[in-house]
Image (cartoon, rainbow over the protein chains, first blue to last red):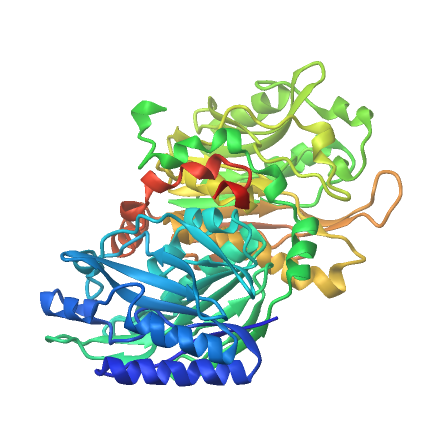
Length: 294
Length: 294
């Protein structure tokens, strides 16, 4: 089975981003992909560079207009689509979400980003309520798949809890980039850390990992240097080997083969799941293990 | 502060391995290291290539003869030593352990390997009872440090639970290598996965990681192709940047600078610990999340 991740630029018009995203999904399907993952919040620029309540206007319900049009596309092409959306759940209650549309057009899954960042130019805590649906893998006609979003990718717990539900692939729609003023000094290490920690999840869990990032510079809606999204979308195998990797500066559709037999082989040779010390992990629900408690 | 990891070959004589290990500790101290980590089971060849009860003769008590001689060395040199030992706890009860000897010669910590592997030529489940001391960081005169052993390195839970106790460095004494018959095809990916998953722990936890591996070919005590230990000991910073890395085929002492200020800076810029969803991690104590339960 082939899977695809879409790496794209976003313009100021949501309708145009949706159209262009759909064109990329078609291109991925034409290359034989059975599952296509779009980048985080693909219908808009990354508005979280500033805190402005006007941006809540971009949010929509799930199901809603975008899931309807993408559901029709999924059915027409016979592909599963992982569609990250800005979800309006109620007045004053919004989530950074992703919907899985099955290849018959029905909704196979709904994930709400669990870990919400907040640092300069990534002011997500203002917009997004932390997810309350837990970590999820979903059954689809193209197999079982897990969905996590961006900041989740730094958390081994998120990868583990999703992988324990039996998917062959963890999808990570993402919006991450460089602060232009930091890029020269910090850029290479930041991008490498981002890729390495996710390859680590693939290895520790014996599962494919597919990351779909946006690309290109987006100005800050108010002022500031904006963000240069670093692309570098990739697909890694269950041993962390990078099967396909995109550029840092171009729109691309990345396609790679996913083989459940490879998951089986890797896990038989390195049987990490067998030896987990589940009797000794309970303190992982603690914030920190302060010295006086030990 | 400087730390060091020792990469060494082991011969058939435990007394000689101990002597040589001590010589490497002296060399590390001469280069200014305040903490020196020896490889897993450094007093002997990797006897777990076969299951033979005679090898239990190698085990010793903790404290015992080796901790005594290494404690004296630690005090004389004024260094902290992480000393992996085959521990005899009682008749029929053995552990794959590591002792932390403080720079005044006293015992600052005792860790018993929690995750025990068992796969062809690594028959550790025959020899070692899984650890019952939990995941541990220890206070020393050279700062707080965490100790894990070999197979533990594949488990994000182990790194997290140790890092949550506040160490600046996680030490991983190790004995890992290639099956000679697999090396040409699988060798590069295996070694890279080993390094990547540990760099991932550094990144996810914002902590230094130092891995000390043995090196060289050791014949199987009975028959078979033996194991070619791949060396490649390394020290990575809290962003996963490799500060020092050893060869695949030579004995070496690796030294690198550890700066608690760097831990502070990295964690301030990527504040992962702040956003952990401790309300949603409890199922990490499950073996698997079978579909029917979801």
